[in-house]
Length: 502
Image (cartoon, rainbow, N blue to C red; front, side):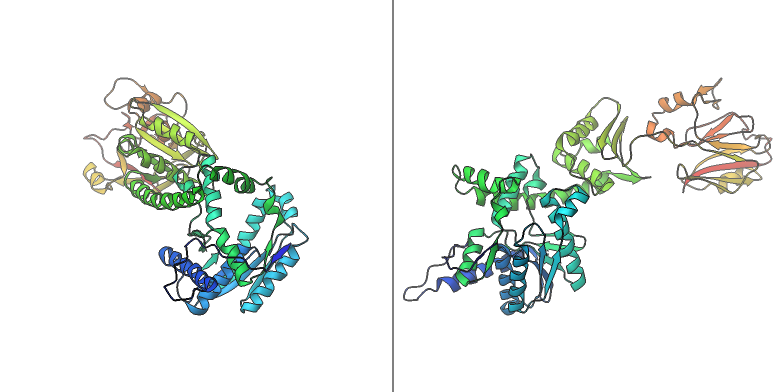
């Protein structure tokens, strides 16, 4: 571990104002105040804190986080009442880790700030979880910081990511082909597990933070692993960015500006996608559906957003779906010809098109579980839990009474009770099923009826069949009624069958 206390000239992102004629300029104090003011401006613009907030400050001991702790302490002391909690994580990677923890503890004690320490055996956690060193350390660190915020009743956790970190993040995401959400980089504020993660330094260069620590005599530690290019982020920072800066000296600033522009435009698109979702997407029985014609009327940028939003709703904890799959879904929906297809999107997500209806499901396609219910006599209500429906049965003395008892919105059919052969069976469909349709000569296959009526295959297994005691299919709710037990002038009692959602 290297601890720095020497002074060097400060180099702030916001250039110092020239001193007025005849006035002596005090560079250290002026530039420190400008650094604090820059943080205050970012906080006001992005709503990072309010008077009286409690904030957990993540302090690794490096110059960035040391500067963050001192800047926030200055703000809480002279600008706005804030309660600070200093939190440090010893990841157990290096022998110097204990010295770094002691450095941060002494710093918090000198400032009169409560200190929280977590010590983890990250190498052992890596073996248990299968994660790499940086991923394992990040998971443990963030969990500790969020837990610390909850214990102290803190609204947020302050992180010391700066403009250089932002430029690295945007460049890494650009190299892997990210869209607008990825190019937005790290946000000034985001919520994780009901705790806000705030980054007040995102517009400030690291050089300004290092020089501030040195100029004001704040000790800090340097982690030698930051110079190891075996880590991808380090390689981008130490090799790729310096190479590109030779062609574009303002590249780092351009990348941070790109992140802010992309972030604002991404927020706008997210809001537009949510409005589009509410307008054209329906949710029912564990799936999302939309109509092709409504989707086709939406601009292509929103079409992609809408697909991603639906998939996020289906499985919120899954990684970002890649562009080729999103585009395959989009182009499949836009095909003009009547068609049917299914696409496995991975992670248990499936998209189907049946004619002009598109379905998104959170489980792979499989066959509907078979079921059969035997009813020796009418009963008021039979719940078909396999398909989320209920069959309601009502006896009436006349057809007029049966009609008056019909409930609006339910699928229903009327039968001559005395002609209907019991026991009734309500079951799932079987191969080769046929029905003698009222108004037609002979029988017709149920499968052919579904095809003729353009019933999507995803819906066919959810339609129950009502059979009489002789095995005849007497009713397919919402589809067809058979010739059996028809109500006529001779009918003395009417049995009204209705199908409704559970």
